[in-house]
Image (cartoon, rainbow, N blue to C red; front, side, top):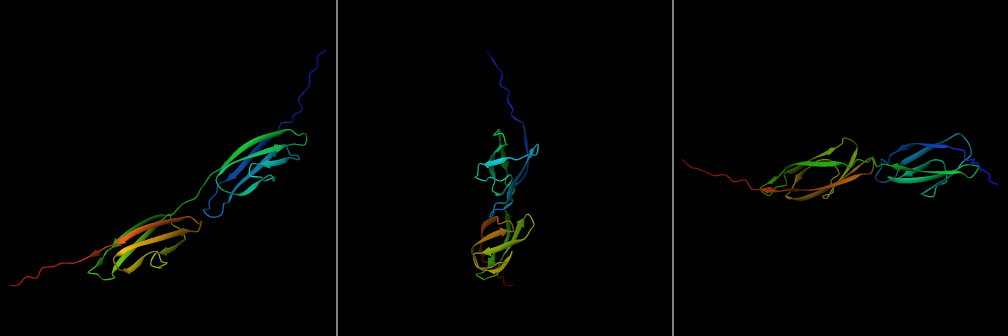
Length: 166
């Protein structure tokens, strides 16, 4: 005697809407999933979450096991990307002359945006002036918490000139 046992696995589909992480300080990526057909499902995420959707994620891979009312399950892995932008820094330096404090550093930051500046001499502006010859370091922090640092040197230039008589 032989018999056939049918599989009553109701198939379901898992789709997602993923938002990348855009912060360097507080992870804010999300995975919003939808399971069809509608029904009651249990969720087990690789990060320990048991909700349908997960938030405040850093970049990385996250796997969910979705189980339906008949204990059938399906597993899917999603990847949250990093979409953070660190500031890019460049300078134009005007060297000090004859031991005076008359040097300048003109700092440029890209991309455009709101930034906080902290220079090794305590200045908090983008550009600094009235500088003596030495090395200055700046740390620039964007509104997304991403930072960049740059070290630059103001040199001393001694001017020389010749006096001629007639």
